[in-house]
Structure formats: C-alpha cells, structure tokens
Length: 617
Ligand SMILES: Nc1ncnc2c1ncn2[C@@H]1O[C@H](COP(=O)(O)OP(=O)(O)OP(=O)(O)O)[C@@H](O)[C@H]1O
Image 1 (tube, rainbow, N blue to C red):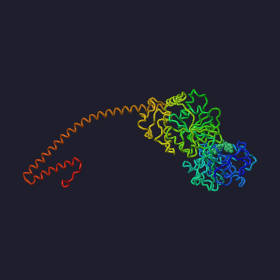
Image 2 (image 1 turned 90 degrees about the vertical axis):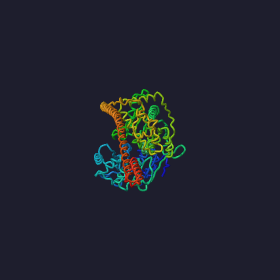
Image 3 (image 1 turned 90 degrees about the horizontal axis):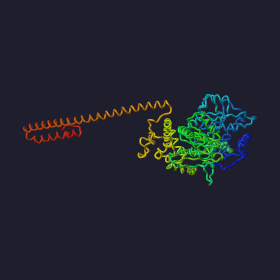
Image 4 (image 1 turned 120 degrees about the horizontal axis):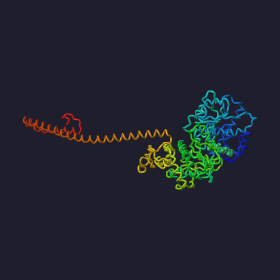
C-alpha cells in the first residue's frame, strides 16, 4: 500500500493506542502523525507483519516504538507480568549510534508514563558491542528485567546464546535499516537471531531504501507482510525518493581542489550543523588532523567559528557515542561532524542543515541515507555532493533514474583567492612538519583508491578515469605511492619517480624522536647498501671487461685449433682415397661419394642434427 494520508490527528488512529501515549505525542510537540505513522501503527499494533519504505526523516522510529509499547500492554493484559529471563520486544540496528538513539526515543516517551498503570515500569536495555561484556549484559538484564531489547546484531546474538535468556515471550521484532541488516555483511547473524525468536511473533522491516522482494521477506521469516511505501512529491507532483524540503546539489570540481572547496564552504556557507562524509575511517582521522591545524593557523577565521568532530567505526563504542552526543548538543559555533557511512543511516540530529559528500558512496542507496541526515521532519536542508569533472558527472542521470534530482550548485569558489592560497600553503606546511602525516596520507590515499574500485556503478567510477595525481594533491602528498593502479596513469603524465613536489625525502623527518631514530638508521643502512652495490657493480663491470678480452683471445685460439684439425682430417681422407684408388678404378665413384658423405655429415653436425648411421642419409 502506498500512503496518501496527509496529516492525521493521533486521536483519529484506526487503532486505539494508550491514551497516555496520545497525550505524550502532543507534549513532545508531535501534534499530528506523519503519513508513515498513520499507516503503520494500526497494522503493526494488531497482527500484521510490515515492510515499510518511507523517505528519510519521515518518523519511522515512532512508527515501530508505539506498536512495541502496545504489544507490551496487550501482553500484560493477557498474560500478566513477564517471567524472569523473558522480554517482549526486540529492535535490531546496524550501528551502536542508531541503537542508542532508539533507546533515547523510548526514554523520552516513557518519562510521561503514568505510575498507576497496569505495567509498573517499562524498561529498555541497550546491547551493543564493546560496551561491557556479554556476561555483564546478561546479569544486568536479569536484575533490571527490561521488556525491550535494542542492540546491534553481534552482541544481540551473543546475548541470546546465554542460557538464562528466554525468547518465548517475544511478540515483536523490528529490523531498523532492514536492507542493511539483510545484506551480505549482517545477514547470517540477523537470521540466526530471528531463529531464536518464536515463529508467531510479528516482524517489521523499516528503511528509506528497501525492496519488498520475496528474498528479503523470506530471510526475515515473515508471512504475508503488508508493504507500506511513503514517497514525497516534488513541485511537479511527481513522486520522489527524497523529502520535499531537502535540496540536493552536485558540485563539479577538479579532484585536487575538493578539500579547498570544502574548507571554503565551511567557512563561508551559512549553516548551524554540518555532516561531511569521507570514504574511509583513516581518511576521517587524517583530514580531521589536517583541518584542525588549518583552523588553528587560519587568520581569516575567528577563534571558535568552526568546531570539528570526528566519528568513525574504528573508534571504541564509548568515545563514538560521546562524540555524537557532543555534536548533537553543541551550540554557538558552526559544528562539523567528519564521518564515514557509520553515520549515514538513521542518525537524527534535527539541527543538521548541511550535508557534504566529498565523493558519492559506493552504494547508491547510501547516497539517500547520507543526504537524509538533513531536511528531516519537514525542516529545510541542503546536501551537496562533489563530482570530479568528467565521467563522474554521469552520476546525475544515474540518480535521476532512482527518483533523485541533483541540481548544479550555484556556490562559487575562487581557487586563486588569498583564502584559498593560504589553505594550500597550510596543507603543505602541515604535511612537511611530520613525515608520519605523509605516511598516514599515503594510507588514506591507497584506501581511497581501493574504495573507488568498489563502486557498484563501475561504469561511471572507472579506475581508468580516476584522477590519481589530482587526488594525491588533494591529500597533500608530495609523492605518489607505488601501487598497482598507477598503471592507469599514462607514461607521459606519470611524474618521475612519483614526485609531485620537489621534496628531499632523505631529509623528510618524523617528529617522534623514536621514529626518527629508526628512519635515520634505516637511511644509513640504505646509503651503505647503495654504496656497496655501486662498488660491486663497478667491480663487476671491470671484471666483465677483462673477461671479454680473454674470451676474445680464447676464441681466436680455438678457431685456429679447429682449422688445423679440419686440415689434418682432410689430408687423412685424401690419403685413404688415394690408396684405395690404387686398388680399384670402380671405386673412384665411391671415393667421391664418401667424400660427400663426410661433408654431409659435417653439415648435419653443424646444424645440430643428431647423427645416425650413414644408411640414414
Ligand atoms: N509526528 C511527528 N511530528 C513531528 N515530528 C516528528 C513526528 N514523528 C517524528 N518526528 C521527528 O522527525 C524526525 C525524524 O524521525 P525519525 O528519526 O524517526 O525518521 P526516520 O524516518 O526513521 O528517518 P531515517 O530513514 O533517516 O532513519 C525526528 O526528529 C522526530 O522527532
């Protein structure tokens, strides 16, 4: 079913939810339901499985949180309090951040729950990796008795494996960002989790990008689910896959200017909170360091005008959640979260009004999720994606087919401005101040090239067309790293020994004294090795000269000897013939033949023919 419901009062829901929930929605400022809530809550609260595809920021979270609470009430009414070790609802999320955010949605609602209620207390438990141990989680669960579990796949599966955990009362399971949870990276764990749960439970799949393909439904163990689709309309009343208030633009830019462009935009564009997407974890760390330095040194910006935050999947769960909460709660300055696709899906920071992608993601669905971090819940948002001039511009048509319109950005940028030139100088100074930065830059660059090769739209993002040198310049690298992909650079363009800048690598030092000591030692060994090699080559060359002379002499002597041998043989044959001729005149012909035979035999020898008997000739 495709929803056409516009705003609908909570009181008008076709299924009567708890009255305190209706009041709570008003208290939280949600005066009416969003279309996805109006369509999904009655279905899931009763006895339907659902597959919900609704644009980013359309309120899908409440569309499953309310039915879970409803199921809980029904359970208490019909079966009384939960037995020890049991729970009623489970939500699976692909990231810790999203799991934690869903828990906060529950907490915000539960603050309004009346005390004199059929359920004395409703509790949730967060189950995510690298926060405590599974044993701690189990102990905590048995003590606190939460009715709803929210977690990431790995930890949830481990948790369910504990003997004291009972799944028999589980009435409802939700897969948030279901397409991600059922893709190859999580599928096995998620289907194992679902196997622990009772078959007669309800299941809901939610995402902004999900297909109702039989395979997905089969994997999730659903029977006859209802598909709910909520799209939005553009000004020409056409259905689109992005929220109406979200404007998406592309920036055609040369590869080496991307970072300059980004910094210029962050400094000059009006926004409150921005999310900037980088391709890999290491590139977030690398560019975070670089941009922090540029910011410190920059005279054009006021102190504290911009604040950067760095978030990626290689950080531990604790700092990750803390960074996101700091970014969410930041006020005053322009706040910028530098991140990877770990923060592409589900993250709801209502004040984010700008999203910038340095490159499109390898998966086109993720493009929608990244852009959708802004323009949520009818707020206005702007998303930009940088495309390298050339073949990458085909991405515009590629996304149009998917119902996503990209307009050309009107933001202008002057690469020769003082601001921009200072930026370039700043990058150079930063990278040259410590060779460890170059090493990290090289690793980031190599990781980017590998990332580029993983684009599912491989005909647009071709390895042959990537601007390797421009990209290395954007990474601030004075020298191209040696890697197999360098074969795509034409010989005419390939800089000699990979040098993009004139840098003496023998003097390029590490700031860390220990690293520098090792480098100097290695350099010394290298120099000595080189010297030894040169010496040995010199020696070899001399020897070769001598050898060549003596072998010349050798060949002269050998030839002479051979000539004399042949002469002696000829004389011997002539002698035999002369003696035989005296015996019989008939034999003269034979003598000539024999001479021929000897000649032919010699010829064959010289041609390398294996010699047989004379009869073989
Ligand atoms: N009925 C409502 N009225 C107004 N705002 C709402 C309503 N329901 C939810 N919201 C707000 O809308 C925002 C987006 O909601 P939510 O995070 O559930 O979106 P989503 O559809 O799950 O998005 P995504 O696909 O990106 O995960 C939240 O800030 C939430 O508070």
